Image 1 (tube, helix red, strand yellow):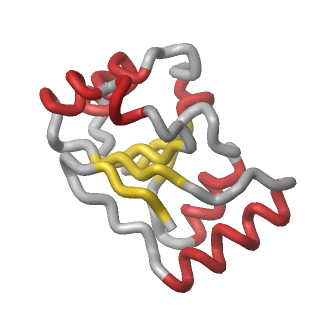
Image 2: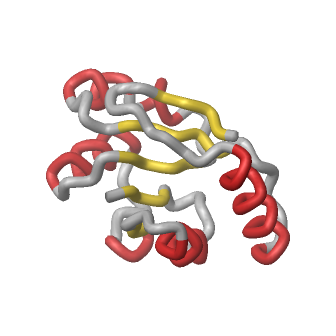
Length: 111
């Protein structure tokens, strides 16, 4: 299961569900205030395998937790922020070109 970091639009969870991806959000889980290392620990404990974030420094701020929990894949979403409808269109177009394929223990930039 994938998690959307607190900096991601919560509507993206529904868009991912439409693509067959089981997903939840940090906001829905009450994890929005967790520091990145704490968030990685919560992910592992709850059975998540991937986090999608716009935080380009996520990997460095959570480096120790990620080293200890190599089951988590981190995907840095590099699409520019836009109003939801535009963002969704941009996200789905990028997905159709190259779907996200998280790698456990790795940080990837997408698209």
